[in-house]
Image (cartoon, rainbow over the protein chains, first blue to last red):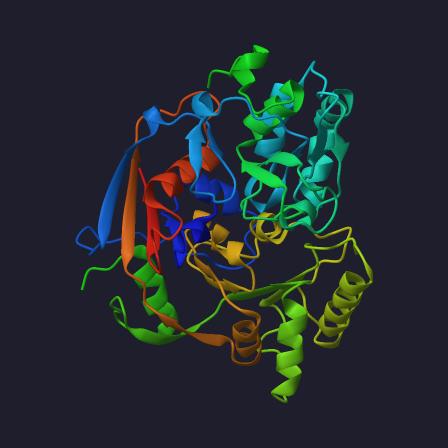
Length: 211
Length: 200
């Protein structure tokens, strides 16, 4: 999670049963669960009704420049990037595959998928996600931060626009200073790769799996 | 004194009973992280300071991920410099291309960072490990060099902003949407030097 985007010192969650399941068996050292005291002092407390939040898209050139997916309008894209430290995990790839299954990437869009680690890469392959990605016309990169910071594996030319699950969309972040980066979740990035413009999985008729 | 999760972790790592916002402390670091862009500068500063050995060969993590597999000659030189340092210092948690991955996905996956840790990394997204209930923050390459030598770093104890989320998530909405929405509401400097405590 990009807490730095609010210039925070850190972001933190209370560990819970899900944390325990995750770390148990993989932790290389002893761990300890901390929680805040009930009477701890806060600078501010902010409450959000998550049921009012729809998929978000951060427009150029700041992560705070957000719109709900229904307010995006028509934004054509040249590239879609699914990966990075923010959204290159197995769950993210499964979500992208759910949206891409049975669809082809728009002929105007380069879709780049970057599993974040070798373990994720292997598991995604085993689960058949790579077949879905390849059938859709995606290219699958080895793990790297590459395009997120305009390094390589998907640098943008002047005037090009990308939808990306990365974490920053500053001027020139993914390439040319006159290119543009729009930030989203993996489902929106995958749907946009098919539509050729920023859009929702619902526009492809993809049903969200009930829990 | 009643404390937040962040204050408790900082206090324990500083060997103090309690800490309060604004206090300057010196704390022990559990894990220090550098990558192929930031670590070469830290290694240069480490040498300039006349240091010979890192504070703990099991607790300095070096990951080539930003421009690896090498994208050009400059990145190749940086990766090589880091690899040679890792060999020289017998760094346990060095992951070569083929075992490596994007650092902030790799460290939790490999169990290198754990709940309750104090983690610093020369990368701004080091805050990721807060998801495990660790205090985790980004530092500059020269700060990392200091940690490489001493295993400690100074901190100013942050104030805390608590964020409380309620209600069921809509279809196709996940953590990325929650945080983008929150950034949109609070602004890109909306939590300047604060700790953000995410709760439900």
